[in-house]
Image (cartoon, rainbow, N blue to C red; front, side, top):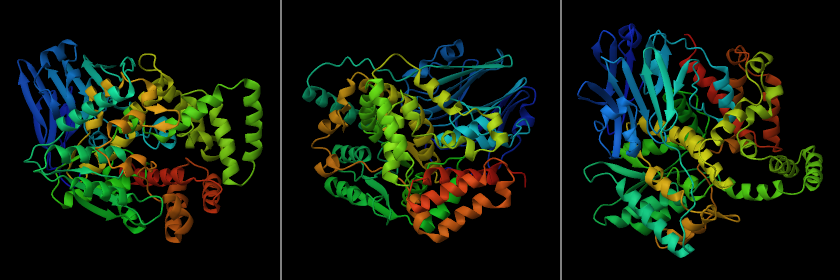
Length: 598
């Protein structure tokens, strides 16, 4: 079920069952050590830590920069959360058999997953959904709402899972189980007081100090085999540059993946950064044939369907690192969302100005957009798309980037599927996340939304899945809660000023990052699926074989005519449907691999 075996750091797995059916619920997974009493059974493997403080027992996976797993256990049992000050990655369980009480915590961004199944007087908690799927207490029934969210977001957002009845703890969540009943509460959220005063130069200097300190704190020890993801973007490049300048006696190793297709490859920038700071770069290219092999690894290795195609190059990068003896990687995830680097933040500034226009002007512009949208021209379709999206408030406007399932709701989904999920279910879910936390500037509200969804439930799931497949741990210096909290004190226009992204960050990184990297256009880390669907006949045939064979059609989820239309529109270039098509392929392959009865 879990190959290859984990070998380092925070990599490990456990499943714990509490209740009268504990021993029956867990069984004996291959490679796991079993322990426990009549009403408690634990199966674990890898770097799972445990201990006891008084009558309280604890179990954890943890890579902590600040904190110890056994501190504050008694307070946690009493209902407080001393671990809120911890920095790093962790999931922890604490239980007291005499009091029939269990408490579990996820870290600030759920960088390690924790799943929960409540079944009468029993409760199961596991770090991998497949451990719970293997339990006889689990129904293994697909949750149609979770599946619909997957179609829109490309992942299943917590607290749902693809399996009905199993929940996934959200970021910074405390789960308490007592006398057959479980409750959850959040102990932390990013907030944005925007109260840091001073001119740009003063604030840029302070930001630089905070960034350098955070990267330094997350630096692994010399004895560990470690390196850095290096995409060629500003976040990973800044981490490599800072680490290389901190200790000239230790050469930083960087790992980068590129593509032959124009517009997808940033190896040139990655190699430029490595040369400038005297890092040791390791690089590789991923082609279509490699990607087909890696796609199967994504299907095999992720414990839920995961439709972000960038999982493929991330997996290739982790494999490259493992080949060179790396046990831990540092990643730049979170930088866009705390420094203001996401391309759609700048676009949203433009859309927000349109949204504030008088209603009659917006109505005229929207009418022109609708007329343009009737054309087969991709350019004219983009005009329609802009006026439609910009007419909406947030988070509805932001949701239109993640609305494949709802955009094609009537034509894509079968009648039976539509009867189980309303069209706006995913939008309502996003509205609920958007409403969390204190009032904030409009930009900060969508940045907080991205931290809770795009980061915690997409990007980190991608990196964690890729690294764990190769026994590698990973650290995220830019998701340190201290750094995230500090950046919340910066005004919004320090992050995006007009259409200029990373406004203060670029000043702070002057002298650390090469000018070429600071000035380059943001590219992202995507897979050339859109190109292959149009130009690679073998890839197109494979996609059709998966989506149109009898096994797929028998599920009764999607209408074939709509999928045919999406493929045809993409191939003639009138619209880019590659994201949705890829999601459908991954979903079908994942269901076959993990949920279908042999």
